[in-house]
Length: 177
Picture 1 (cartoon, rainbow, N blue to C red):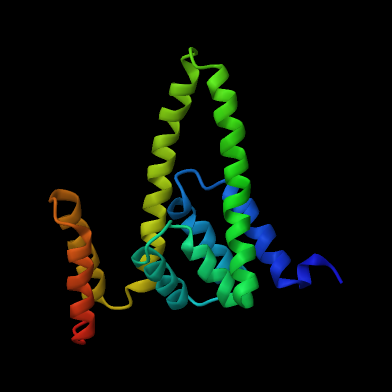
Picture 2 (cartoon, one colour):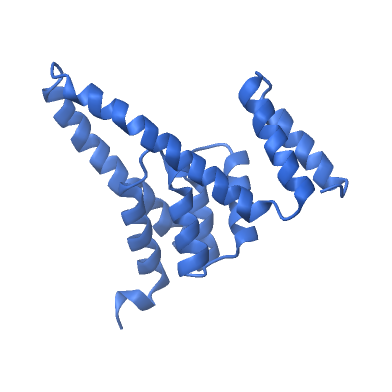
């Protein structure tokens, strides 16, 4: 029996690799998480993925909770633990090593240039995450329109996004979306 047959191994290996490329955090890895969980491994549907993302965002704690929910849906509590450890462990170890290394080159200019160059990459990954979630969750034109309006309001005003989420939830609960 190879490790490919074991769902815990699949979860651990998949999320350990993704964690090393999650520049900008777990939300920046959403496109790859979606591709693996929905398209490649068929661990969940688009709707289940969108629901897991919503639950992870509404729950207190880190954004990486979506990985925990994916792992739970695949292999229960053991899957949740394997996915979470795999997503957090390699990144934490890498961050520790890089921070120690950067403290030794504190006076050099290139670390700041490198960090600044990663900002557009992170923004692009976050935009891709938003696109994936819109495609996964907005099944009707009114829902898509509401997403666009909420994104516009959130970007040009100081309205707390929780109010926008609450308004969308009320419209959905009322059956208008």
